[in-house]
Length: 462
Image 1 (cartoon, rainbow, N blue to C red):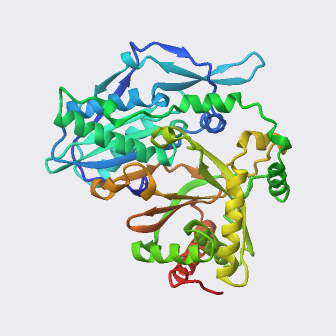
Image 2: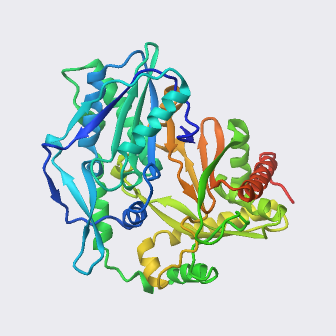
Image 3: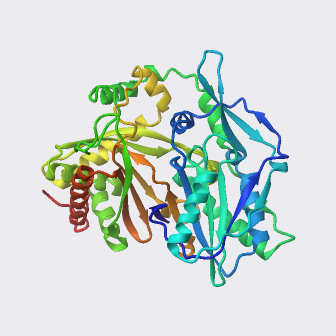
């Protein structure tokens, strides 16, 4: 699974067909299940986002030959029937206190329809990318239904299936699930048009059930000993989320267009060596790259430690491993650069395991316990790690040329995604498009790559 952004996605051209989700005859009910904490936070910001700058996640993969349009339409329909969050939408309405309430609507899936638009001809990769980007921005609106994108590029030799969703419905793991589900559904309907039963894919978990559990959680998290670590973490930062320690060339409250940095970190062989070296020190690949980041920060004059948040999944039940939804929370971590890189890896491994335990506390309970957070920036400095080799359908990702695609919007902080695939380790970095940010983040990332390369040679010092 290649992790990229829509401005870097380079599909081969061809006629692009989009299927619109028609809810005209699909009645809805207002759900008693409120949005999750993640959804509320996301949707509150999305209400004021300029058109085209909402946060969507998309997937793309190839299939052999020209498209079987009917089989693909049935596959898209079965995907929506399979995952309950894809039958939901959100609307904003005035509440009795004069504020705005975000409510969830659930549509009758039996009466939802997919209607194909006339194909849009594209002749170059730039043209195809621009068309896909426009269609994604049009479809994946966070408030106002529907907010899903289903499309395909039809070619004689090899076609591309595309899907996208507002972030309220999916996380990175979900994109792998969607690609795998659509692969199996399309092949099933194409090969057995009158006999395929989508139930063959097996049972799947419910994201709405997850949201209901979160809403019904009345445990006293504030009294947990682990909450003291959360309080200490935020107290060190004045009850603000952590920020990248370098000067990004922005005044508080200002944003800039988002820039993207994509680069390889280690090929498959070197990634295996990094993993082996880190495990010998009691850490993991993630701990090793975080340690490299701490040393990189010190080397380029950003201080001896990095404080950050990192996402972690909450798919603890087996059925949720193949569910679509935003099953993530966050955990806090401060990575300190020791004199020797090997010591930093070992210490980071220990700290990372402890931080995972803190992530078991719902982030909403954390915000309440610390008395609320003050946001100096709209973004948060975070580092994510996803090993796509362990996600559903991973064995097919290379053959499918599968892609995970994110939108580009505006930024005022740095966010880094580390991805492990069969091809090795890669970095995708989101940063403000300012000269200062390019300068400091570029030097930092150059140092991260160089220090990680030292790790691939075994436990290292310095």
